[in-house]
Image 1 (cartoon, one colour):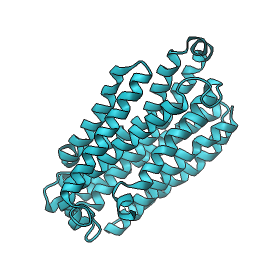
Image 2 (cartoon, rainbow, N blue to C red):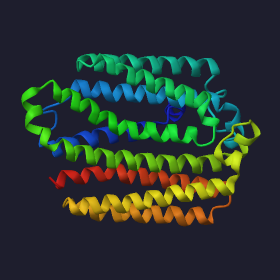
Image 3 (cartoon, one colour):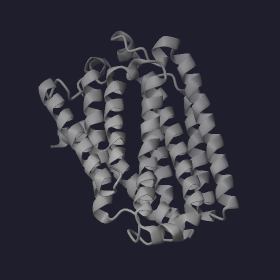
Image 4 (cartoon, rainbow, N blue to C red):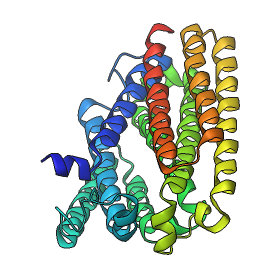
Length: 312
């Protein structure tokens, strides 16, 4: 069971669940002036959305490990599970079970919202995850951007479907539509944060996995242009993230979200530490530690959403 949980990246799945719940409960609902599930998606619909997202994510992790099997034998010797504790057949079977479950649950959820055409979103995500693992992952920057976009999308989907659920409730929709601009701004802030932090981690991870990727012909940015240029790219992304954090703070201050304004000094500090460690990093272990720091940075950003509960 522990090996299975490790295979499906349970900490990442937990972060997805927490992100989606905090965004709906502590950002979107308070900003609209609604109690939890007072309007928009009900408990069952939101549960279906989260479950569909989780199944698609699990499928994505499995197919990624499948295509990474050779490279991981060098990058993570003795730690890769596919081809070891889990056979190729078992991994492929689980991939199809999880991916089809995600698409079917997403289609059911879309039907309940009277937006069955949006089932294509879940099909698109499943296809993008497969193409990422099979093709895009080993193209300079393309794979990194795909992962970053998907990370941001998990935030955007909550608001997209909450909006369509509200559109089916004419009276509540009319009452809260004046607050849509605020919700749009807040969701875009967290989507931008998720995009930049995910992109930074992906580039750092490529530098960390340079040996295996190079040996098995995976043409990542670090392999094609060298680790030095990849490190400079990561520095550029980290600086962009720090500047974005400053802008977010400015917005929080002008919008009188003072708890968020104060908390983002922690985010600023973490970006600064990441930049300093990038300047000093030389060994694989340095990039591994940096990758863990970036994970903590993402977690801090996600948990900051709790503070909105005290701002409205």
